[in-house]
Image 1 (cartoon, rainbow, N blue to C red):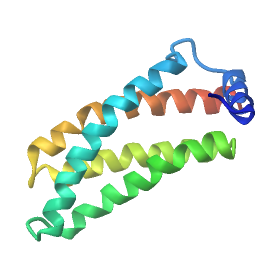
Image 2: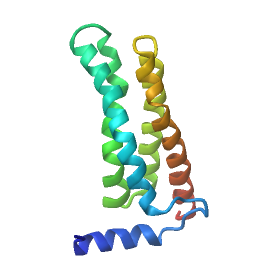
Image 3: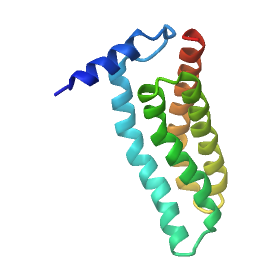
Length: 137
């Protein structure tokens, strides 16, 4: 059940100028419901190995920054309605995915490769956010 505030938020987002290639809203939920389990398994495995002392603790840096930036995106974009800050945030998400993949690869190649769909989606999402930020400046 939608709350009145949900309608207000969705109408604001729907009114933003978007590029013609922007995916329909339901696609986001579908994609994230696929990606989050992959992300949790890949990053969870690395965190498990860090806790056990099997891999360097430094691997946590890109994972934790990525998680924080990922969680912060919607409150920044939708809650604060700050497209420029959302742009900075989504770039941080993208950069930390690459950083984490490079850092993890020597220790758990499968975990690094498992993040590939996340990387591809975030490249698309970053291009979309950049377009929205530019079109609604």
